[in-house]
Length: 228
Image: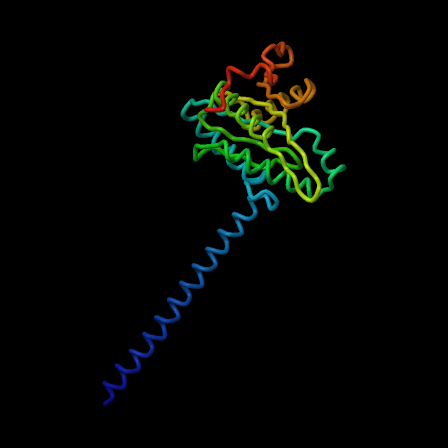
C-alpha cells in the first residue's frame, strides 16, 4: 500500500512538474514572439510600413562589411519628393501622408532582389540600399523609380496631385579606411545637385571639382531603361 501511495504521489508530482514546464516553455515562446514583433515595429516606419532609418542604418553596416569582404560594389540612392511642402500647404497633411504612402509603395515595387531595400529616411526623403550594384546598375534602378513616381497620380476628396522626385546615387567598392555612411553623404550631395538643377531627375555623385556633365534630365534618360 505504501509503495502504491508512493508511486501515485510521484506520478502526480511528475505531472505537475510537466505542466509547469510546458506552461513555462509556452510563456517563454510567447515572450520571444512578442519581443520579435516589438523589434520589427521599432524598425518599421509607422506611416508607410516600410523599413525606417534605424533599420536602414543597421542594414547598411552589414552590407558594407559583406561588400568589403567580397570586394563587390555597393550602391545607395537618396530620393526626395519634389515640392512636398507645397503639397502639405495646399492640400493638408493628411493628403500629404497619402502621397508618402503611395510613393513608398511605388518605390518598393521596383526592387526585385531580396537584399535590396527602400526605407523612409525622414520627412519626404527615402533611401535605397542596393548590394552588389555598381553605378550603372544603380542608375537603372534610379530611372525606374523616377518613372514610377512621375506616373503616380493621387486624387482624393477633391484634392489631386501628380508626384515627382529627385534622386542622388552613389556606388563604390568598400575599403577598410572609408566608413559606410560615405555612400549616404555622397548620394545626398548628388541629390542636392539634382534638385538645384531643376528637380525631376537623377544624378550620380561626382566629387566637387568634377564637372557634372552626366546630368540625367528626363530628355537624356533614354540609355537607362526601366526594364532593369
